[in-house]
Amino acid sequence: MTDPMPPVAILCGGRGARLQEHTGTIPKPLVEIGGLPIVWHVIRLYAQAGFREFVLLTGYLGEQITAFVDGHEWPADVRVRCVDTGLDTPTGGRLHAAASLLEGGTFCATYADGVADVDLRALIAFHAEHDGAATMTVVRPELQFGVTELGGAGDRVTGFREKPRSEHWVNGGFFVFDAPVLERLAPEHVLEREPLEGLAADGELRAYRHDGFWDCMDTYKDAVLLNDLWASGAPPWRTWA
Image (tube, rainbow, N blue to C red; front, side, top):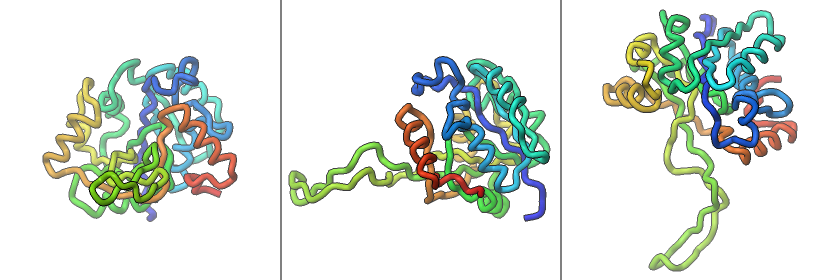
């Protein structure tokens, strides 16, 4: 693929309330995995696939994210900039606030707390091949608990499965949007509500199924898991050398 990759907007403004062990003093995107903020890992995923323009949509403790971006040495051809989109602005409102930097063509959007071994070039190709205005990567997350299997009349335990994958597909982030999607956004919009629901109702939203590794750093337990995977020397999302 020789065409320039589209810009990537990364949602970095939330408070990370369920990760209070860390986010009382630093924003969630700066919680570290292997000594580097998780947002660095997200940027690295995209940079490995050839993306070069990144817009970090900040809010809560956003000045710390800006300080990290300004103080980090990025590759010469990678541009990372921060846009303050307001303290309590919802996700759709944050994209709306950065519309002037994203309009004019296709753009990507994702969350600052999710990592995966998703093939981002294949995602872009999938989006280009269908006629919808939006693509959402969907995943089947690993369930938090093991499953008890029942048989017979329902009271006989036949076995156990340790934390199987959900049978349902959920929003895994890693979006691709065409420019008209920006017209559906307003300052008060939660991206996952009115905009995505409207796109789905109009037949404009497609699902890109990802069966590989995916995890979202939602809780302290998730942060420990991701750090353990990194310490193993072969974290699944590290698609770069």
